[in-house]
Length: 322
Image (cartoon, rainbow, N blue to C red):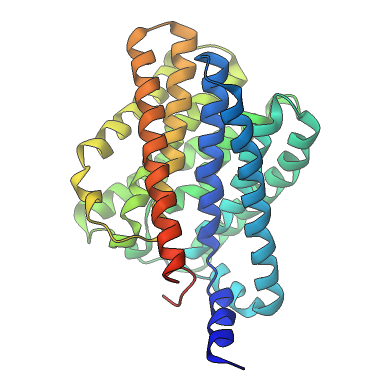
């Protein structure tokens, strides 16, 4: 076996579960442009094109990870028992739920094909993750905003689930997500303020703080159909975290590229969608300005992240032993 073939084999071995963050980011961008076409008269071709690109990326990443499972099942089992990487497995189910949202309006059958297995898988991963936390003492240093993915990700289930199952079941997922958002946020804030700072590679995950209230706002509206006091609280908390990470921009300027950079994209897109929804329901021109700002910022950020991803793929610095 040549040195090159050994290297390629090892790259498959180190193909990270975090690659599904790419799907989450592209899905967020796709939904944002779909809603921009619906509410702000953007060209439909942008959202439609991104829909097919995002779907292809999901299946490509899934195909590679399935091959990895058959060739390196022990490696995946170790990842599934890792105190940090275990949280990223829920990115698989969240990717499926977001694809369900993408297809919901025009292709409800395809949407259902993603939503049902995605919701079931996310239910399992939520239970598994909490059981893992209970059965294994967690070090405070292991806590980071990626903890939101398997647990708080439950708030994403109702966004595409309306019409597929009854309201009570959707309310279950929403309740679990909102409850654990408050609990986990308190833990993370304690860690960030009173203990060691996040590792540099996890600094981009601070953007995940935007996602729970932004997605929670969208999910709550989908179930209730109105803008009330609670939905306003969720929206303004999402706005606060968006302004906070913008205020901290210097923290992110000199970060070395990691695949975790994709954590920048989905929360920004979620805030963009929430802003457009709020503008659509209230007609507030400041919200229109915020919507255009979020679309511009999200598009710029994802362009930078895609460029950096391609550059580091060419340098063969992705899928290596960490």
